[in-house]
Image (cartoon, rainbow, N blue to C red; front, side, top):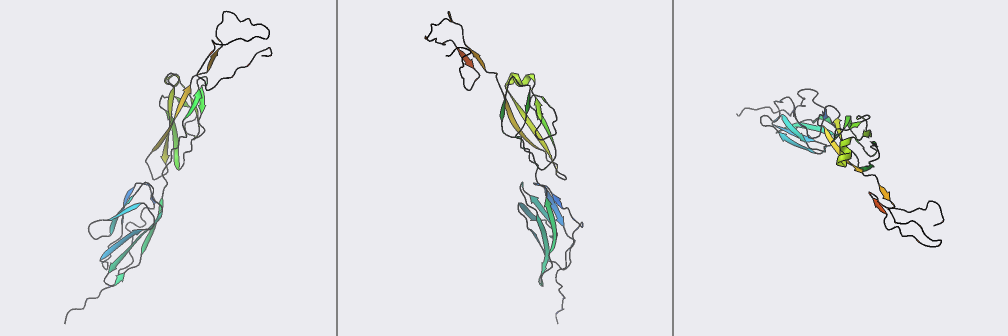
Length: 231
């Protein structure tokens, strides 16, 4: 008679180590392992969230590599064993995805060259442990660690006519990848207006005077006003 071999159903799989890592960063790759179960022929791995590629590692199959993309979602790792008797119990572990730091520096803007400071108003960093502002010209900030600081323009800014204001965001632990953003500040020249020189400024009562020597520069528009008189 042929020998009778008892086949037992796969057992509940146990994590190694237990508990495994819980907090995961975007674009992180990590290996999860369960202890080998002698009743398991095949290990089945799954993730209920999105944005991950699972690769079962060579060998017994009780280890799998999880490669998370840039925008994964939180979910549960699921693993269970299979043999000729069927599927074993599902072992789960919940993963918490730490959101990527966002370094939104706001839209580009301008400031008049008559100003010595500029207040950033449109920056909206988020999901950060800390932020730090810097400038392409080495200019200083009143407090570079707040989302919308005051920037002190320097001589280089006035000479170049523009300066990049850069925000660097440090993500929440355990993530470590720094994120940067920038906005360009344009220093607009001070508008000027000259009436011009004329051989004579006399005009007869009821007459007209042509201001054909007037010049304006660095302006988006112009408006004339009479200072005295009824013209």
